[in-house]
Structures are given as C-alpha cells and as structure tokens.
Amino acid sequence: MVGLPARDGRQYVYRVYAPRDALRADLFWAAYHCHEDEGAPRASDCFDSAEIWWIGHGAGPAAAELAAHRT
Image (cartoon, rainbow, N blue to C red; front, side, top):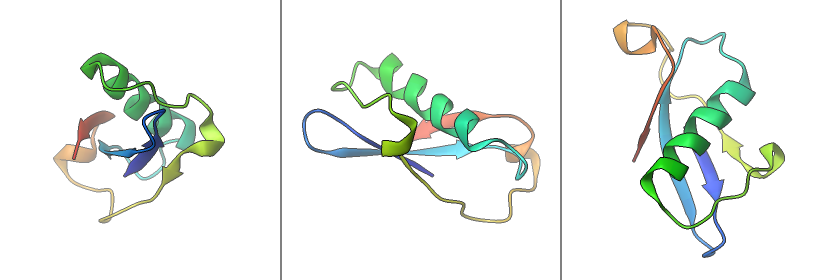
C-alpha cells in the first residue's frame, strides 16, 4: 500500500501489487503515475512524503508484476 499526500490536504492510498523484492521507489512511482492518470488533485512527487507498507505475503499471481490500483 502506498499513501500519497496531495495538495488538497487528503492522502490518496493505492494498492500496489508487486513481488516482495520490489524496490520501494518502484512502488512509489507506480502509485504516483496511477494517481496522475486519474486526474486527481496534485500529489507530492517527493518520495520521502509517501507512506509505504506491505500487506499480505507478496506471493501469488497478482504479485507477478507491478500494478497499482486506487483503494
């Protein structure tokens, strides 16, 4: 999960499906580009401003490649 703070004061959270060994920067950019593609309020592109946390065990078919979805 990746939480991106936006200029409207809200945090937008994205579920990023990725293998457990994915780089945190890759998780951030997947969520950021998903956010930008939706036309949502401008989010911070500062990596350090994002909250990133793992849920689940990072295995299975959904984790085979990097994909982001807004929750």
